[in-house]
Amino acid sequence: MRREIPIKIEGKKAKGNRPARKGAKISPPAGDERLGKKQAWKPGNMLYPLPAVLVTVADSKGRDNIITVAWTGTVCTNPPMVYISVRPERHSYHMIEETGEFAINLTTESLLRAVDYCGVKSGRDVDKFKEMHLTRQRASEISAPLLGESPVNIECRVRECKKLGSHHMFLADVLCVHVSEEYMDKRGKFSLEQAKPIAYSHGSYFRLGAALGTFGYSIQKKRKLKKKRE
Image (cartoon, rainbow, N blue to C red; front, side, top):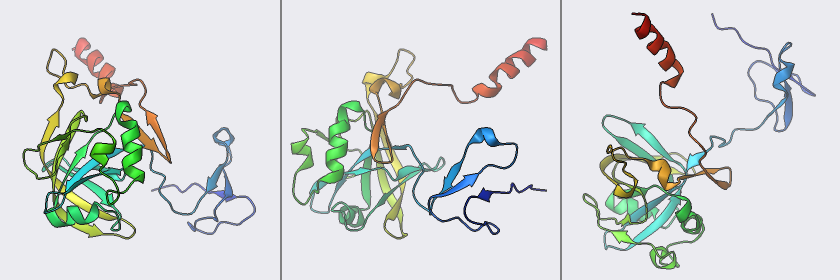
């Protein structure tokens, strides 16, 4: 049976699971004073940090553009699928809508200025490739160009567009992935950390820090100990 933890809200009586007003202070349950107080805010986007990627697109006439996207992520492993969410009023939106294609280009510290520029400037007014001195590379499966300076390029084809509200989500199949040989080690392992990838969090850009562990590390010692005893 699930145990519900009572929440005390200063200055306002909480009823059931009703959200508190913005800025209301939430006191921890008795015995949890070490956790400190929290504020209950209205619903909003606070899922950070996120990858800040450069999405390259082209329309049916071959005119291309670059758009910075932070609302992006993995959807499925098999088949490999990703998504990006774009405002319909953005210049790149109609290009994706026309061709059903785009490329996600991962970003690094050396691309930081381009990441910010391509997010605030419109392709209606400037050629972002030219202004940021970026290189167009031919893709394998789509008509949109890839970004030569990116360590990873992911070619995508739209499977479905979900019109959700302020943003429309393009669910897409991954058709091909390109990785830079510069970041391959002697064992053939791709080391993206060497490219110094960046992340976006609540209006600011950050470099990623040192690795803290690897997948499965929390039970690795137990497995080794069990095998040793056997």
